[in-house]
Image 1 (tube, helix red, strand yellow):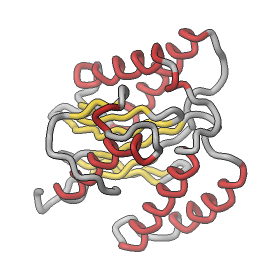
Image 2: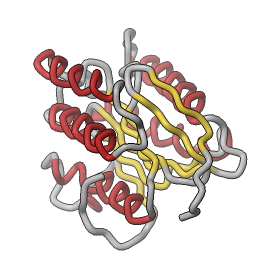
Image 3: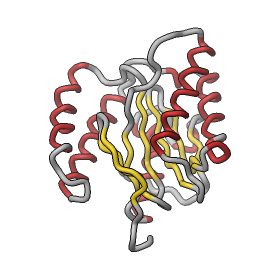
Image 4: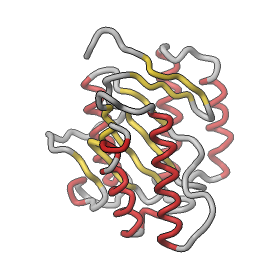
Length: 210
């Protein structure tokens, strides 16, 4: 890992975001309504605390992880819109991911489509477009085409997303393993290799958390 990290962009919407050059970025995007009402107050409390803590601090990393794990516990329960239980939408979404290197110079080296959310590990290319515009454009495209595909209207995705760039190569491996093992953790399959909607570059597997 290079000793000097170049920040490309920092911004806050509902969640804080930090894009850097040359590092993998772990992304989680939930579908609309994937969190029940009971989860919102707890998440809002964590979110408000994140606003007051420097992003480089250990406290920020711990709170960010807590926010992620709370969301995951509820999302894995299958609340709200679950479009990725439908094969045509899954195929559409993975096809759109495969086009990212051409359109935006980001490559999804690992991805899992859970029923109501997705996990990605994105690697930036030399000419990578800004992550914010890349994900916004990709989400818009998938939402538009998926709604047309199943003749529905309304919100498809949550407005924001969760992201974290890998500080070390070991953290990137943990992110990869989490993406692979999420269907196992949610008891959808016994082995990640058996899950239809996981795409992953070949490498030894050891389950862990991001």
